[in-house]
Length: 206
Image (tube, rainbow, N blue to C red; front, side):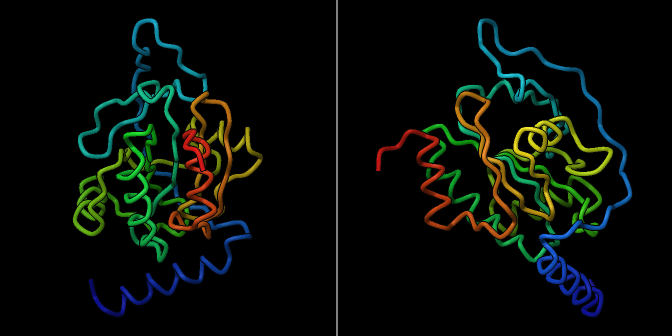
């Protein structure tokens, strides 16, 4: 990327971080991928919040979130070109440390805030893997705010009363698939208080 253009991107991102508490600029809507609803495994109880299907980032195969029933989910709207992209490192570290105890981090790339995401799924996947070694599940690029908000984020916003105001907003969903707590962009996944909340949701004793 041309150094001048790159510096402009970074400058815009850090400008956005100073405006976290204000309404973000709306990005033009990209084509929304549709996929048939998949049914949860036979006999499995799936909370309504999770009974939604999205396309996986890497191969666009439908993924129903019912597969994560009974686990703790950390849902994050990501953006590769944002100055907060360094949080990928902390999110992956959380996933690696606690996945065996039932934590699943799920990333939802979005260009809703100043278009700070790549156009193609391949570019996004390559960036996440090559730059931060991301192994946690990532879904295809989507809308997390505005009129075209995807169904999961629409429910999260309704349940918490808090919508993403910038990239890397976080929603921690309990094992019951109903208990949800929202965290702002400024909440670093490496923070002790945030990790304590994750451990509490997982049922890990202090």
